[in-house]
Structures are given as C-alpha cells and as structure tokens.
Image 1 (cartoon, rainbow, N blue to C red):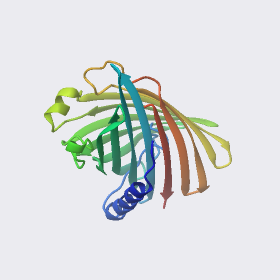
Image 2 (cartoon, rainbow, N blue to C red):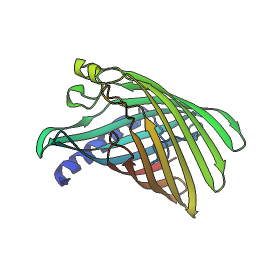
Image 3 (cartoon, rainbow, N blue to C red):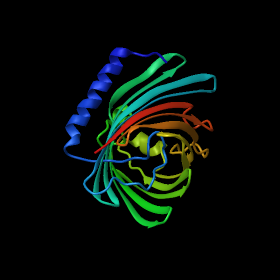
Length: 272
C-alpha cells in the first residue's frame, strides 16, 4: 500500500476540524481502544472523555482469477459525557477513505465523513466484580452513500455488555444486534438488514501503567450471497501516560475470508 503524505495530512487536518466543530455540541464512548468489544465503564456525572482513534486496513482476495485489493482507513473523533454516574451520552464522528483495485487498476477511490453514531450506555446493574450494561444506538445517514461512505438511511441497534473482574484480569462480553436500512436499491438487494454480533475481550496489567489486551469476535455477514460470518482476533497494548491520558496500539487479523485481512489501530484518550 502506497503512503500519500499529502492526502494523509489533509485527512488529519479535516479530522481535527471535525473535533473543533462537534466538541461543544455532543458526546461518545467506545470500548477501551484498540478493543472492539465494549466495557460497562462510564465517565461519571459531568465528566468528559475525548478520544482520537484511527485505523488502516488492507484486504486482498482472488475470485475466478480476478484479484481484488481494498485499502482504507478511518480517523474518528469520539467524545463521552457522563449524564449520570452510570450513564453516558455517546457520539462518534468518523472520517473514512476507501480504495479498491482490480488486477492493479483502481476502480474506486473515495473519502469523506461517514455515518455519525449516537449512543447511550447505561450500566443498569453492579454486584461486586460483575456489572451489566445496555447500549442502544442510532446511526445517522451523514455519509455519502454514492461513495460507499454510508447507508443513506438511519439505522439502529442495541448492545448487551457484561464486565467481570478477576484480578489481574478483566473480561468483557458483548452480544448485539443492528438493523440497517439502505437508500440505494443495489445496496438493499445485496445486503442483509439484520446483523448480530458476539465478541469477548480481556485486559491484564503486565507492568505498572501498561495493559495487554486481546479480543475475538464474530458478526453476521451482511452479504446476502455468503453464509460465512466474518471473524477476527485482535491483540494490543494500552499505556497510561497519566491517570487521565492513555495511548494505545493494536493489530486486528481476519480469521476467515470475509473478514478484512489486516487492520492496524492506534488511538489516544483524554479524560477531564
């Protein structure tokens, strides 16, 4: 994959502009990046967390002698606000880029703002080292569906989250459902609307301020033509520079053909 420094600089600049525009208006929390699986933790009433998360992915496959290569990435601004001690309001603003090639010839090359997500994470039960949360979500059609950056219609979903602490380990389980709607007829015909998700993650502190993380999961294939569901495995680290500043790095690999071959993830989280 070739690296275009000028294009990357433009994307980073646009990303920070998005943060500036949305910071005073909204909020979001995701799992402790680079994990895909969420945890039951919340920010606490009146507290904020701002995340800058990024990923670069690569996927290649050959069908009937035709080699298809897809490269892409995302930079997301994520802001979380504690509306109560056990509930967060969550908003995510992604900036994406996608490039597809067939036998070395570029057939698409797009970038722009994707669909914005709005969520509420509610931790409804805590008992000693075990806790449970629900996270309903709505996906707003802000991405350009003609460029493949969004669905063109609002979608919705619900995630059930469990966290169990077993020192020095912490485990997280997610079971979720997403209902997608599509504006374009070709997307409607090609994709399933109802998608389930299941994943398991664990973290452990290996030395002071440094956590190792592992994650595995599977999700229903949105492609109507395939009954093989994408599965992944992920490993990474989270380093706490201070109590309120974390940086992270992870690598996600596909366990089967439908899953993206390789994704590198990096991020930063600031709490105040």
